[in-house]
Image (cartoon, rainbow, N blue to C red):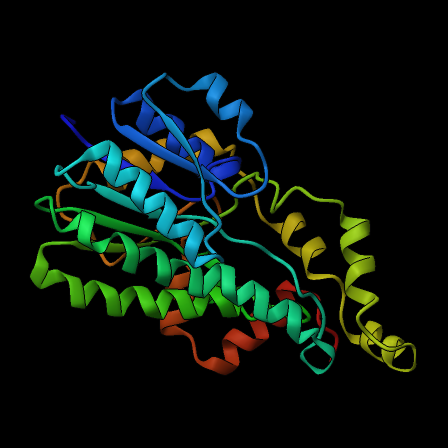
Length: 286
């Protein structure tokens, strides 16, 4: 891969950590970032060539500091690839009773963070020929998740942004793609289901709780029961072979178990038929 360099957000665990380790193994200069969680296990597994940086994508000053550190390290060579991976879940509950402050914060991290990140790193990406940006979205962009709209809404917004950025960057020789992960075993998908359900139902006032529970179940339970989860290392290997090694990138890639049919269904089924499928998938009673 020569003198290839990559900046990856959210690399302390899960997908980000696995991608950082894979690229480090393949000889890339990896700038792996974390927010609050120390990336001790990543440092232990990686080579001395990997550089760990703190970067909170919700904080513009934190991003600017990370860009400055990368520039100091790389000099005039510029950055080869940017992988915007950091994200969060949260703000559960029906739209009627959403905690909007929590939703604002989720959008700050999942949507505005990648915008800031791309804007900050574009001058460094322009220094190399055929540099690339990979934005990790989600297969939830194809889903309507009752009582769980906030995460897919943030990722759907990011998906639209990625399409626009791809067209705008093409004349400058910068390729952009969206990576849509299927089921991957991470902290985001491996949490306490009982605690998650309690957090969800606690958002609904007591006088409406019985009404909502009559028609809906906790969406996290349904997803984990119906989707296989890959280990992050397997997912990273697929991403490396199917995307990173390719000279020319497609607009988006869907990688992971049990999700390849989702974009096809989304494209060819009517909205009403998709609604029926989602109600069945998430156990909605009407």
